[in-house]
Image (tube, rainbow, N blue to C red; front, side, top):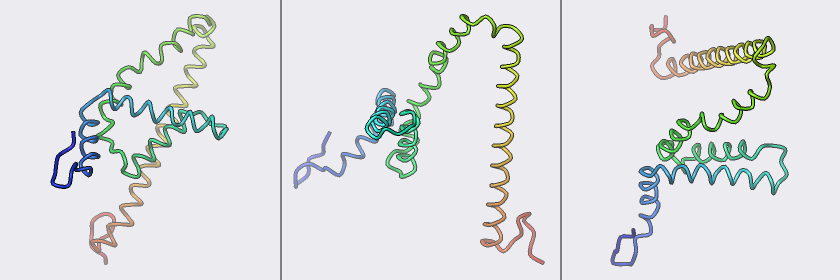
Length: 156
């Protein structure tokens, strides 16, 4: 694991070796995601924040990714595994519908319509916001860098 040098062990290579190992092993990636989640749970219990520990864990993971301490490549296999097993995580919620027969009637149709409409509104709003921000970003960067208008023509 360590490379022998004249001075002893090459401790500088340790982070590189761990990054390589993390990128190649799905179980290590799942374990890292689990550890970040548990760290969020622990912080919520210690601080008493009115926030789910999983949300704080997600914020910690976002911080790790944002600062570059962890790369998205290092978590790709583990996160894909979690997404592949998503139905198993949601199965208890689906099975609870069997206990509430009223959701299979008119009430269920109303709830389904509300969920679908809400999802559609969120997706359309997000798409329009991202498109607007991207166009604004292009309008800010292109004229300053290349001396052109946002459409690609020259200044008049």
